[in-house]
Length: 281
Image 1: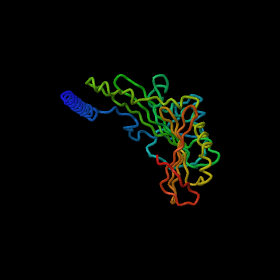
Image 2: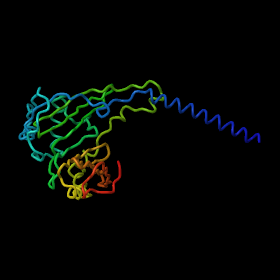
Image 3: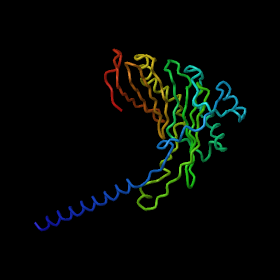
Image 4: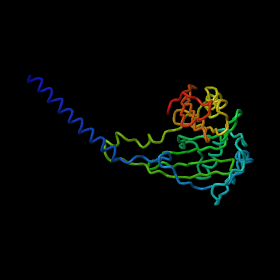
């Protein structure tokens, strides 16, 4: 009986110590500031630039530097319909790198990396979805005391680029526990998929073959948009339907090895052809 009482006492003592340690750990986590990033703390709208989408790619190839004209008019109206420019993800990256060089005076290479997420959008679904209508691309680098970042939105249908250069202070943690639990560099992962063989075009093709095209034909391409987003370790292709009688999202998580996982989110569907089984994201 004495041994049993002693064991119970020890277990109670261990439980109390573990609870106190948990409270201390939780308090440390709650009181420790998080490292700011372009994702958690997006920059302000930044500067707007007028571009000529008919010539900008050729001008970049020629090494021209006067391709971004500062605009004080704000976001212009759309001038071209979806699909007017068959720009690939490589084309958008070339424009983003040119704008990055314009903003920083440094090439987007070497210490500069791609920050996830970024995306390429198609505003109107169709059978021949060649090229993207807009893109968001972010670059960053790691300095000893900060994380400089460029946040670039490219809108060829509006003859417009919107971009910002921000410098996020690196948080320096004082205590050993905070240093053990938090690593500022971990908040700045490199977007590896976009630099590999799995391009945005290939990710979209996989999604189309895995059910995207079939669903477009069932639900119609009207009111349908596509976003091809790159994360740190995968692509996400997301189809959106948004009309009076339909609010439906179909997503595909695509790994760099080509494996694909399908997800559905049916919020509103009054059409007879709508899918009836779904999995909430």
